Amino acid sequence: MTRTCAVAPFVGPAGRILDRAIADAGVDRFMIFVTNAVKHFKFEQRGKRRLHKRPNAYEIDRCRWWLDQERALIRAELVVALGATAARGVLGRTVSIAKVRGQILSEEASGSVLVTIHPSYLLRIQSDEHQAKKADAYNRFLRDLRVCAKALHDSKKNPALRRTRGGKMGTIRSLSSAKRQGQEGAE
Image (tube, rainbow, N blue to C red; front, side, top):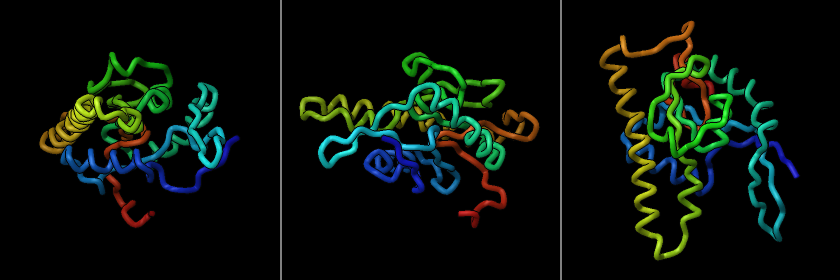
């Protein structure tokens, strides 16, 4: 089953974790554009619950043009890909989150990209004995977002650090810092 989402991304429990982490990392929430790599919600019905189903490579690739349109409008300085689906959508290829996590990648086609976990991963760490693991995972996620905050802060202090490609910066996934030039009232 598939349904098209007409609502804002990250409005549930994962969104609350993301909002908390953004604030804890010291990033201005109003300077961030949030979107989804795949523009539909695929799910499996289990009783009254709808369980999210991971999109396949074809679905991710078919939604890439939306990301390109958003990139052209937003002109992000830095993109944060939250999870494997986002990374594939932004980079156009599969990457190992464990290998590239927390590093700012300079991609020719995608600009500056940081890959990290999806906040829903933190929700899946559930049992009491894993509270330390959950806290550690959140702190690592926070460190990743602080890398972004530092990079954005440094680029504001020294505009020569900004990497441009024909006037456009980066691609958008779930979290990308963007200068919304003239776009504040567009929502």
